Length: 451
Image (cartoon, rainbow, N blue to C red; front, top):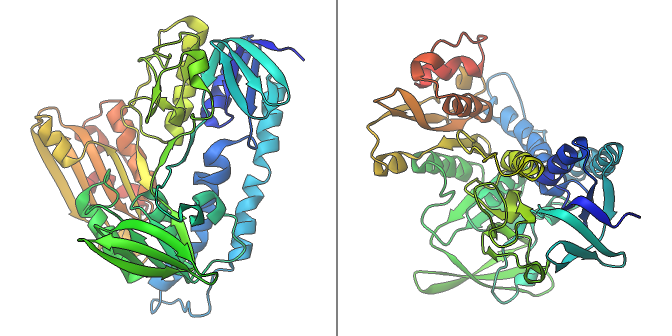
């Protein structure tokens, strides 16, 4: 086996696959290595299987919203083992598909735990040492360590999506994506769900007004939220978990059949022995310059969740960062990642989305703004499906008529947010957007009215 390459990529998620293929296409000798099945978090343990589970919850919710409107949903229920099996029809084939695609492109595929042993050399456990002219770190992220007694009892999102049965009482720790998305799925599947959040404002990156609407919608279907509540310990008596929490200086014991980690993620870099390669890193990942090159070792680049960049921790960002890193390794540092107009979505039911600035951020930046605010719960596209929880808030620069930020809560708004993201990337004005002639009746036809 060749043990010297032009490029070695650590990790085989989306950033890694795109970078490896781009460099291999250019004629470089490339190897990838991962200790887990190929595919990364999104394809195997995150966005993709999660949204397949969400489909079951969507069906349940849609039927209930149409009760008394021609649909009788009383006997409709989620068969959890079958739903998990459905998600695995996708995740089960992805590692082989990804590995096969890499190999057909001439990439050497390696498996095992890798560590640095020099500035351009790694060692793979049981396989020896491998040297490369460039090394790309794209190892992704892992659940943030939780430092309380009994933290070993926490279930993470990966384990959640492998459970054969869904427990009756589920407690989620943290007020972020994981807790809200899985909480909304579990509640529709019949579980009693609570989320504890140590802050006053869950889903902090999203518009406060829309978050509060979503919280109220969640409470209607059984997703409870405890604010300003800190986790102190987790214990078990062999039958249930006893979770001690603190609020306003007073402690309380909560009882649950499952406790799920939803307290954020951190870069998966601590086992790489970065010091052996003189690689600077911090809590947010590998320290890189604007070209995604290590600040301390020019042979090293980083992309995705492993890198400390200005991009949000999203799969599409990892994809284009992988491509940018590959381009800069191939041609010299010429390309910088463009983070304009990158949308994000919380796939609750209904979904909550954002692109660009919050209102307060635009005000702090000194923009002369107009906020186009709409309660869309009575608009035809939502009336049609029985959903009354829907609203939009668009932040517009009065001076240029361009979009500074868009915030949407409602069915299928995860698709509409992409229009706003594209408008921001292309500097389109609201007048440009209103020129759209959309298929009608479609959710997209509401775009102009949102402005």
